[in-house]
Image 1 (cartoon, rainbow, N blue to C red):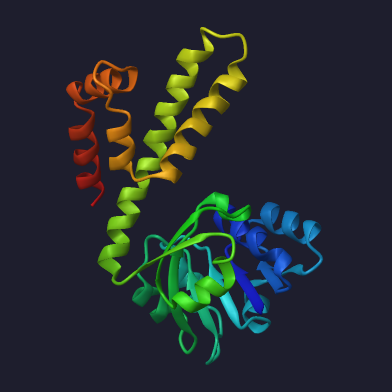
Image 2: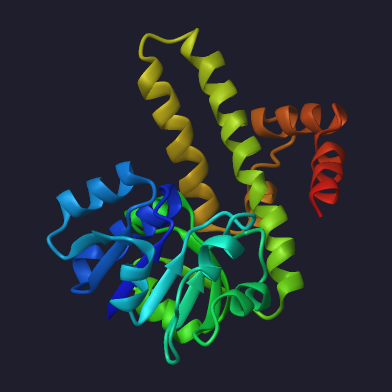
Length: 240
């Protein structure tokens, strides 16, 4: 495909890295020059242009802009019929993005994580599932959503990643004070969490770790008594 990227920040750059080896011709905007330059230096099929140059050379366009600045930036550009837009903008719905790019059409909204650069990451999306799968489905897990409301709920729930990472970091810090190899300590905990949660549902894992009087049960019960479940639900409700 001929793919353009307007707004080449960390997430859009990661998305490009994830597909750059697939034979596409990719052109990225000169905004966020550090990322744009790094991509063009790393991949022979990636080049840089101004925003209108990106639009003119592309059939599929990724929008990696901030929702607040997008109307002014996109309003200055001349899109054409037949162009398909995939938006990464969390603060603008698919319909809102579509209104900004006419006569092109915003056909999908997706929320990549940085891991999309290497693959193996979940991709939540709404809209043209076939296009998103064609681009990213070979290396990642695509989670299609039916409505903007579903996407909004997923966006809130995915925020559990940061507190989960903080919990692993804190446990790794505690462990690192008691062992000789701090780096290995954190690596062990990361593999422990990711491998077990990828192998079974959370409910099944909780049941498997619910040995009466066991370490996992005792720590979980301590955290529950300290209010962890209520704090999590209250935080998600506040985001929603």
